[in-house]
Image 1 (tube, rainbow, N blue to C red):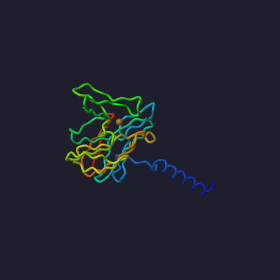
Image 2: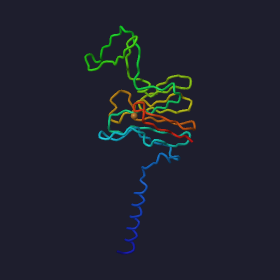
Image 3: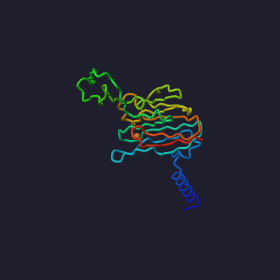
Image 4: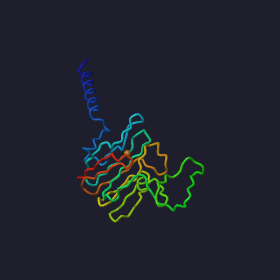
Length: 211
Ligand SMILES: [Cu+2]
């Protein structure tokens, strides 16, 4: 082996080592202060081992930066990213409504295999899917309710909101319901620690620390 060949081989080994040690796509969200796009996974895993957690559970960003959540799972399991900044806005994925006891319900399409859940009470109580959980929703400091245009809503959070919710995030390719999303992006305009959870799996919790 002559000297030139040896030099080429050594150079290739060094390049290969550096490439393996620092893959171009790797971003550590916790340390991604200089990176404007921070990703968090809502759920994950597969149909033998589904994961109901936010990964990573905590991210730290600078004011004015954005965090995007997605649902990378291959299981058709929905998740939400829900900030309850005023405890009075805590809610659930189901929504009980009182209706006159004379109300007749007919399934759509007629004859299909479904019926409303009815709970006993002074009038009929029908339990429906809660649109403020299912659809991206913001309740501002004045109590005004605004649905963000789905899918994959983006929101700039000033920090005085009572409630900020992603709507249901469903894995890509499994967005079987109209208007359902796979991602949610929030730009944070105030410093502080913003805790959030999943309304479908209330043990799924995460936080965004804004410096
Ligand atoms: Cu969840």
